[in-house]
Length: 150
Image (tube, rainbow, N blue to C red; front, side, top):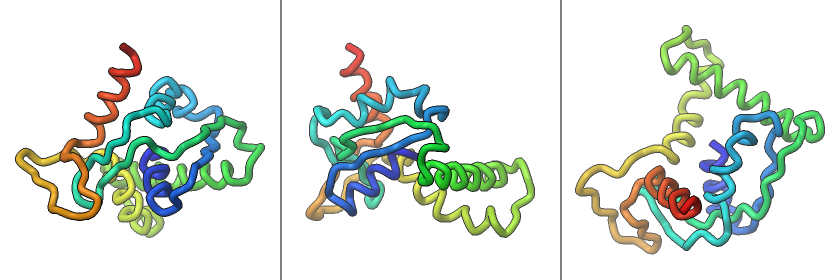
């Protein structure tokens, strides 16, 4: 989700991003994956399909990890993460949907699928001013991590 949000924000804002994440989060434990993917030295690339496009390098100039009590924004993010978790539980068939989860479903799914949709075999991207390589995002990220670790 952090990658999808950073990519979405960078497309709109076009300026360097500073991300502040909860230090007790799973993302803090996976920093060895996050840092290479957002490294400014990653070769430029535009990958994806249609509107599900990611531009590298991401404009994340800094990622900080802090206690959620230190920033109101982190506390709000905790509330939103809880809401997304509730929606996901229902979406995966592990609970009955309430109005709250149903209202969350479309925007959360739209954002998360931006980062995980694979390229269909034989797909050719339509011509345009921002034509991505027809590679799926997870494969491109794996390639970045392979290069970093070798």
